[in-house]
Image (cartoon, rainbow, N blue to C red; front, side, top):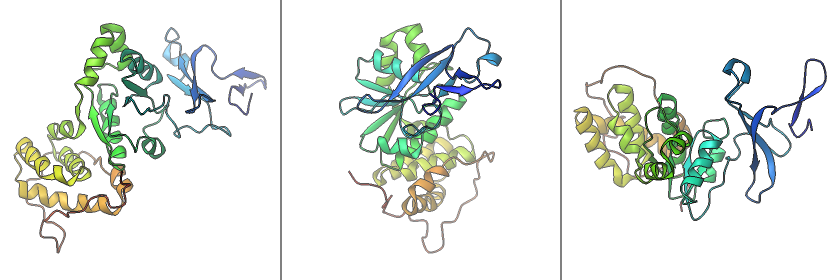
Amino acid sequence: MLTAGLVKPASTGRLIDRFRDRLTLPITDQDGHILGFVARANPTIPADQAGPKYLNTPTTPIYSKGDQFYGHPTATSTPVIVEGPLDAIAITLATAGRYTGLAPLGTSLTDQQAALLADQERVVLATDNDTAGNTAANKDHFKLAVHRTDTLRAELPQGSDPAELLITHGPAALTQSLHNATPTIDRIVSYANDDAAVDLALSAIAAAHPSAWQSGLEELSEQTKLPQEQLQARLVPLVEAWNDDPREAAAGAAPQQRGPFQRAATSARPGHGGEVPQSRRTAAPHR
């Protein structure tokens, strides 16, 4: 029981149930074998007494957090990344399996989890519509961009999550929010209202297919009123970074807040003259 992570020693030396008074769900592999558990806190218990909202099995000989999702991608449905297991269940149930909810199990999306979706044409991001959820969605977008996986962002009501939307408005509303999902890169560009957000948008453009670079620059220029020439000069080193090491580029894609736009012209690297390299992510796997 200790090795499986189902119990833990108390201060008295006795063994106690790790998941007591929690809704406990099995974490399985593709063949249905149980690897561990994830348990949701009882909502009737005060937060200062309930502990973390979700509690996972600790690392065991057969389970390591971050190696798999709660839920499994399939060949016949569109994967949807959410924050919690109950959100994942809501997605799958509400859409009758047309979409499959996937929860990263208490972590931000890991490299291992992103690799599990490398063969998917697109992934919908349905994290909570709040600051933390939007930040998580942007990070997930860049993790998946390493594998050339396009992402769409579902628009949930402000402050809501998929499980709450299913409860309050029913399966049709949740399904419609997924059908109406728009490219994450478009959302990132549309929110480019300070210099850090411009850097984020340029990182998203650099991570995209080269055929999308010109239109991305045009949209960003229209959004920010910055000259395309300046934006292209700032894009050059970002494209080179994605060519050199996509994972490192993804990890560094969210810059710190720096305040208003830097409107002064930014020089490209010496020798490039501001021309965007024509290759992109040469180290990434090809489909």
